[in-house]
Image 1 (tube, rainbow, N blue to C red):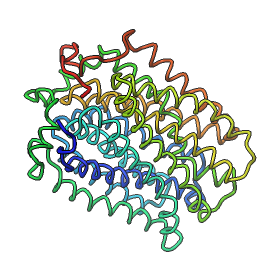
Image 2: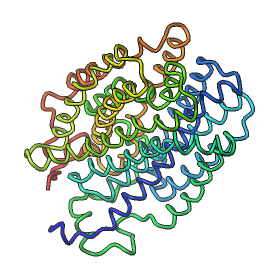
Image 3: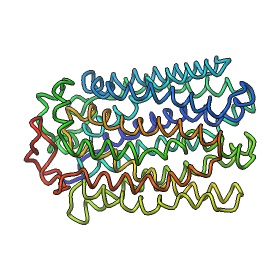
Length: 439
């Protein structure tokens, strides 16, 4: 079908996904930006701060295990609306915390609703976009997360300095409550959306698999996923390779305060820069895999792996941050390059489940493979707190250099010898659907 006649409604959906992940990461980053101030206000130690992060990740992990299946059952429209509402109310509750224990409880509650942002977004991408556009769309909504992280330092610092740190939580959480209503009013599946033109609907649905069994049971999904080498390659790869991201998300403001001596105002001025580069990495990584797919005649998996190899080469040099002149500008510039590479890796690896599994189990597949990432991050968060409090930040940069090549090596070792899906997404019986996935 001529793409020029396909219409634009699907890009409105992509914009809404972009917006919800902005709010998602804005709520997440509010605490990390305020961490230096909360350390003084509440007497919070590095290990206690790590425990707060662990509470979030523990809830996040449990929600990812069952959240994908829930999204598959109740659908993207209701599932994402409830998720946004839950995490936004939990974000608001942070403003009423008066102790480290209170923050820990609020963080746990935030983690319960938080995963829905990405589980629902992945399923929406599988419903609304053909394979050659999914990598770019995944980059769009993933970049929303980094835009939220980019906005957080100046916005949260300004709110805290102008009003109070509690006010920062109230504003960022309140925006999400309103957005949940917008999403519920606007989103529909392509087959049901009243504003979708017949041309765009045909373009979206032309290569779709039979949806007669779209709503799967967890009992049906597990056998297909767990006997798939693609599933294990993704989950192990994410467990190792996505881990450095948690340092950047949770510890950059605290690192700039502890190691560089910056106050909250200075952090607000500079801490957004690495996340801007991460945003570029998200869009650039998704675009580049799409370009490889269109120009080289390979498959989606081939294209994702080509980008990931390039990201590994860059990330191997994270250790150099430790040897750079100890000025905030130089350190932030180096972190920006590494965050660009890390996010480009993550957006491609997280797109692979959408490429290789059918729509009816995409939510479950994304949820379970993300469990790998969360497990790795949970362990690494504990290590960060212990290493920083006992030693320094230095060893962390060497660890983050070693993880990407180790992750890529594990992925290639686990994938089938024929590492490209040549014909289509996996059927329920584990065979490959005889449908072309490249237009």
